[in-house]
Image (cartoon, rainbow, N blue to C red; front, side, top):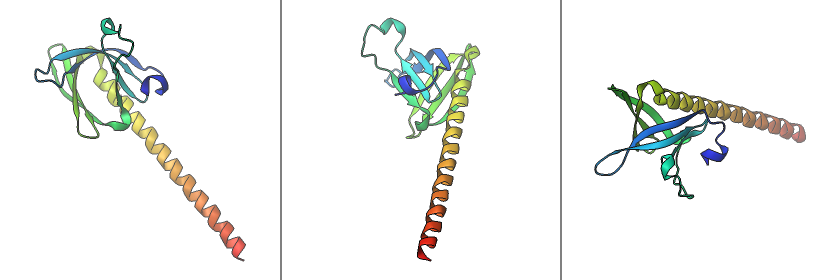
Length: 139
């Protein structure tokens, strides 16, 4: 879960998410950005429900963040998930949520790529050591 094991809170505040319903209304969400992803909570005044339905958008499942347009006081952007689902957001232009989410997603993907390379190198080294032992034992 992102909230408990997602690292330090890098940004917290309000974002508006376009609903999936027929009317596609903008709904305020209380958002928490971490090194692992974005957590969306209902606004604080709905927080009396202890089994609060938080939605987690993990960077591992995120493909891109597209800045759609700047219009009036808002910047509109879309988070595209790996499975192709698109989630529309808006926030005041001066809050920079789209840039922060993009930056953290890129940093997350870079960390994962570095870990993959390190893991691959360790496997190669283990194979070389195993092969050397086998050759010594065969002699």
